[in-house]
Amino acid sequence: PIYLDHCATTPVDERVFEAMRPYFTEVFGNAASSSHAFGQEAAAAVLRARNQVAALLGVEQDARTGAREIVFTSGATEANNLAIKGAAAASTGKGKHLITQVTEHKAVLETCQYLRDHQGYELTVLPVDRQGRVRPGDVKDAIRPDTVLVSLMWANNETGTLLPIREVGAICREHGVLLHTDATQAVGKVLIDLAADPVDLLSLSAHKFYGPKGVGALFVRRRDPHVRLVPQFHGGGHERGFRSGTLNVPGIVGLGVAADICREHLSDETARTASLRDRLEQTIQQAGGVAINGDPAGRLPNVCNLSFAGIRGDKLVAALDDVALSTGSACNSAGVEASHVLRAMGIDAQLAAQSIRLSVGRSTTIEQVDYVADKIVQVVTDLREQQTSYAV
Ligand code: PMP
Image 1 (cartoon, helix red, strand yellow):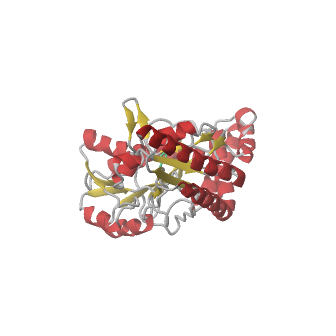
Image 2 (tube, helix red, strand yellow; image 1 turned 120 degrees about the vertical axis):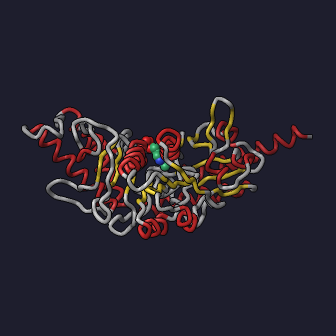
Image 3 (spheres, helix red, strand yellow; image 1 turned 135 degrees about the horizontal axis):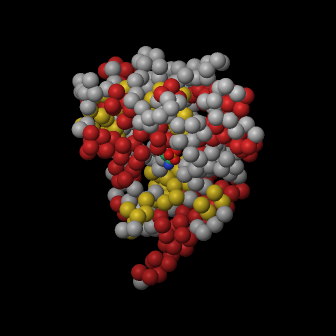
């Protein structure tokens, strides 16, 4: 089968895997055990990875300690939980009001809702426009004296729409409110430069950019402002006390090398995946009745979310049996539930249920794209014909 679901996860790059390998069996030391060579070697590898992640994000590196603003976690879900719960708990002196927006990933939305429902916070969930963008003016209007955190994703995982992070960051700075961004889909695909970008907390996950699953990081700004977080895991005080627990050394090494490769190839990879995505999308549009969901002028280079008039996304996915892709809607036991992201963009339930997400990646070829595009046109045409012949 052809894999066009790189927004869900990516294969581990061979170079990443080879770099990780020794850290399972030979260099297996605990990075916190500095009294012997096993621990020291593991600690040195973690230090290098910390600087590699920092380099990808434009964060200050440190040759002696490793970048001090990178906290390793088990992935973006944990990083989002630590950022939001940790910042909220550290800021109760200022207030208990949080702002987010409706198309966030569940790892942000449900964390905010937990704080609202169980910890006495007030939560403002901002709407988005038809392209899935938040209006920066809405953020400005929602900020109150007791607002402690704004959480706004860098790019949406279903549509690829880029959110106005820099504009919102400037507004947050002006009002002295922290900005967290879930950049899980954006890291390695668009340029992020935290030396300039006004973001205080940023979550990422290795498995979205050819690193291993189960490892990620949270960037925590240490200067202007110095972000305070209440840790959510207590124990041995690893990661400057932000995240206790023995470090996943092979995973962290993999994250570092994956970040390094992305940094080196960011502009070529962006150009290459965008041209594959555009080619895919252009051919598919020959089927007619195809709508692009999201912001065609401001989205990730590698993804498209398309609705096909008259055809349910799950039917289309089932008919494309040799292609791995996602429906725009999340299925649950009660049937097909239209995506909360598309619904929030004002797309009606029927059209939302007619959507699919295709995401290309590092190993995608022109031949694969052409094969899938032609097949989609053919399947869509066939399904529509069947439906009209049933109707008569
Ligand atoms: N946020 C976004 C935007 C995502 O796409 C994902 C992965 N689906 C996550 C968070 C969760 O990341 P992880 O798998 O590392 O927990």
